[in-house]
Image (cartoon, rainbow, N blue to C red; front, side):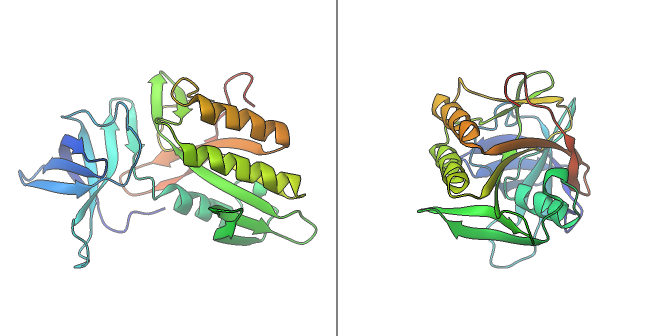
Length: 236
């Protein structure tokens, strides 16, 4: 996934009201940026952190800038939760996810279950239909360990239950966790943050929902799918 325009450097002053961030650009201009991230952004919203922003000239937008990357001493972190589906969509079309490479028809945002849209519906000759849900991951509390979620997500637990239902109807269902940072070697659930989500994950896995995790390669020009990350022992 290429950024459409060169990113603009700045320094984070504060993130507030979930979707807003005050940033001082390297030019000295202070701006309000859109922050497309509903989560807690633990460790990624501290004042003074270097950040990178995209800029749009669309006159319909209230805010021209969007917060895209946070720069830590360990590397770049993607915080825009609108991007994982684009990254995974490109990887699916490039057959870059081995477990899903056999599927030829890829449909995004397909309505299913009672109140949900699955991120991707995959199909192919001789294959069971596959329902693929994608979750953005950028929480790190211990060196090298990516965790999800970073805040309570009842919606995420519902998605797991919906996927389990698809398996029960004879389909295939996959949960893909995409880690938008380059300093992680393993993945685990943050069960202390959201015990209900952890319970829904275990129930879904027991029902036959598959779970995989991938890292990303992040530069100031693009974010692309990287190698799989192993689950912490007992989660695979």
